[in-house]
Length: 213
Image 1 (tube, one colour):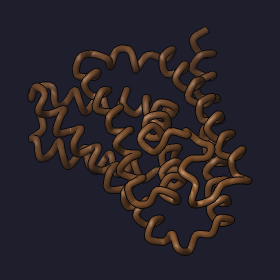
Image 2 (image 1 turned 90 degrees about the vertical axis):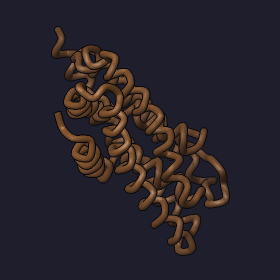
Image 3 (image 1 turned 120 degrees about the horizontal axis):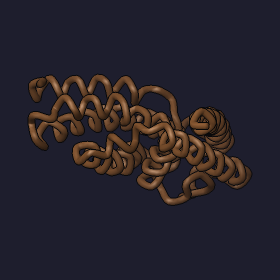
Image 4 (image 1 turned 180 degrees about the horizontal axis):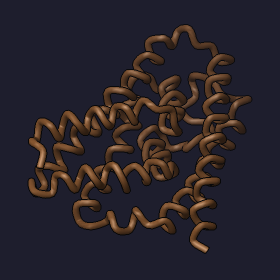
């Protein structure tokens, strides 16, 4: 069993390396930060973190047996890809009337907190990570009761908070350099990235489902 400082440091470093990888949550953070400022990053992480907190509780209570099944991962991949395609379509459809003064056009349409939840649920790699790395790490803390998993979650979510706050803060303080045209290009690029991730997720989900036959 690892010490609590080691659990915290390990979860922070592992989580930080994952947080820095481009993905759907990053595109939503960029999109929201361009209009909502610095707090978009922390708010996206708030939604993402609430979902992960529930998942950590579930893993401690035995949810790992379900999320590691190929059928579950296949369904998550297929549905996640479809959700991301819908999000990308909403973003592209709203581009002609998109300005930096609008509160919400296209995308999730319910703000950064819901965006953090939706992009997490729609990302099968997030599920796979928790079914493997996350589950393994929670298992290592089994001898500490709830303290170890709590420390693991704190380190993990702190890495997300640091990175996405940095992203939204950088974009916010550079806001004066963003014109409406540049903003539309930024959102359009994010939408294209979402389409790419959606197709990858769909392919992986279908492959898993076909492999069950």
